[in-house]
Amino acid sequence: MQLNKHIIALCIGTFCLGVAELGIVPVLGSIAHELSVSIPQAGLYISAYAAGVCAGIVGLLIFGRDSNLKTTLLIAACLILVGNTTAALAQNDLMMLTARFISGSPHGIFFALSAVVCERLASAGQASKDITLMVLGQTTANLVGVPIGSLIGLEYSWRFIFGGIGVLSVLLLVALYFWLPSLPVEKKPLKQELAPLKFAHPWIILSGVAIGSGGFYAYYSYMDPIMTYVAHMPAVHMTLIMFIAGASMFIGNIVSAPLTKKFSDEFLVFIGQTLIALSIAAAFFFSGHLPSAVLAMAGAAFGYFFISGPMQALIIQGAGNAKVILAALGQIAYNGANAIGSWMGGSAIEHSKDYVFCAIPGTALSVISAALFLAVLLYSLRKSAA
Figure 1 (spheres, rainbow, N blue to C red):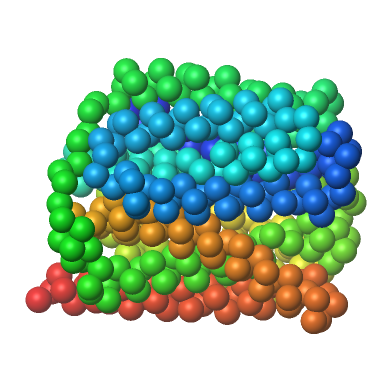
Figure 2 (tube, rainbow, N blue to C red):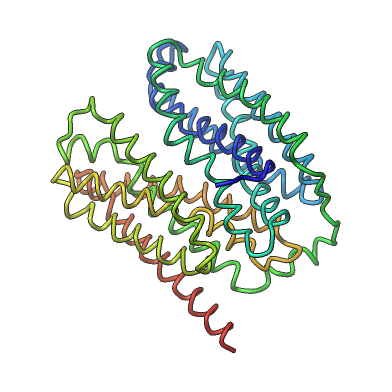
């Protein structure tokens, strides 16, 4: 599969962000020990990253919606470099919190604008495929970057994870500078840019994105205790489970790309979201059996990244002058819903005293999202037939 140079550059960025976001999880205890903080306090380093994501998106909407896309992406790459280098050198709790906030700030910006870049530079009928290929960097991070980073971090030092991202971000800057053309954004009055948001269609899609993402993370956030205490898997095998999850995400992304030529984004998102709902429901009923628990987890992970590219394409589809704004709102929907979904799953566990009950809100939210995208699909079919 041949990639255009600008897509390769964007993939380097999404790889950096994928490792930066999740690479901290397996070494959180080591970081807490070295910085002399508790595990719950170290958990705030994950929250700081999420807060940075939302702050970055707000900054994009206020200051960068009319900026040249290449310039903004180069600034985002600089933030990746600064944030992760600072994390690698952090000597205390405050320095690490600051570093993680800075590291998260370019996350939503980069993914939102990368989708717009792919859409603008794609050949006719290739936009969804190119966006799906751009996401390949993140799925490769889940498959390769995070497991390798955890091995290096646990064997030597967690600082090498963030230092490695810092080094790779230099390559990202070079690739963006030479492989990404200048992409000015035509300045429009804010009222004109917001015009597409007067209609229900984009809000239904954004609602489907948020609800579906929340459903997935209500379940997936608690994969460790489900596998350990419900499926009775030895904790030492959790690395293998995460590799299977990463492989499922990677395969879902790869399978989705060629299908965007044959099927509409609405259809692919509906099918993928339905698979997620069925997989999480299966996890609730069958996680007591280890092979079934692994299969259900793999199905949900496959579905989540099967729809990732088509979903981002659907968000900006027909957005007119609101592409940057809608792409940014899509990232807020993704990341904000992740935190809410994890909270709902945790609340279900707390009330039931059973880890697998996180699949209840996960299934419910996934079914609602699938229903919303079914409505979008039927509307699209009716509009095409008219």
